[in-house]
Image (cartoon, rainbow, N blue to C red; front, side):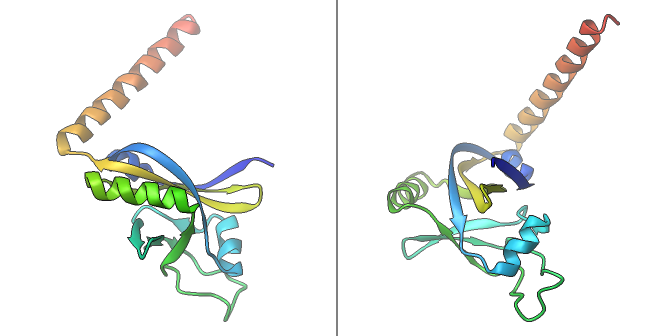
Length: 153
């Protein structure tokens, strides 16, 4: 069936150098899945925490489903992420040893299952963010110039 991206966290790539990404499932209720399919989710302010050898996502806002009266749960509740034990151990080692952060980068549907992509990232300093913006602007200018040359302008 393929992949349908529901939400991207562009702020994560602006604030962190993302080194590795992992695909994780999530423990969700039925109304949360229905709301996600409608695209009513915000992961900009969300973050991941490791507790008792498990990984949880905090502050991810899934808006309540309109037709799901009493079945709806708290929109920003803590949700457990589903990963293989080896992946969890590898992530825990990396986050503890280097002071790296675990950041959600995107949420998507893969073969009708909700998946969350989490990245291990190092925080950017202010000068790194400026450098990223300069590079992005230079790439944009180059693409624009190349487009004009191709069209014979």
